Image (spheres, rainbow, N blue to C red):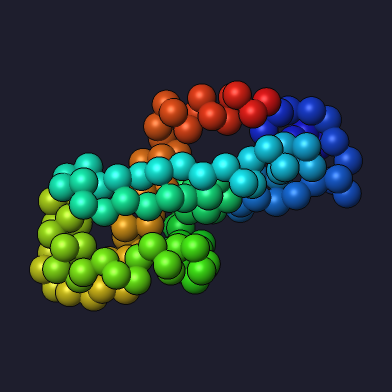
Length: 137
């Protein structure tokens, strides 16, 4: 088996799971776990989140991410950042994406899930994130 980050061949007993698709060696886990990445809403810039690599990895994979996003939303560091986001501001931000109608955007908890999913996906797909991961190798 190989580390999902550095590619080094490793024994499965010497691995750590930092996300649903990221089994890494202990050396890489130490380098990646404490890293944080900033995300700012692109439309108004009024919402910012500081996200851990493990959260980004957990919420940015192929397939349905709902359960992973819901789990990550329970993390205290995420809760501390989202607790004061005004529902109306979040609805306006998400409405700009054009993916949800007014009825769908009326549920604040669902909107918080959408926000975290978008933020993690944006960071995951960014060149800066890739460069950070490459530098940790």
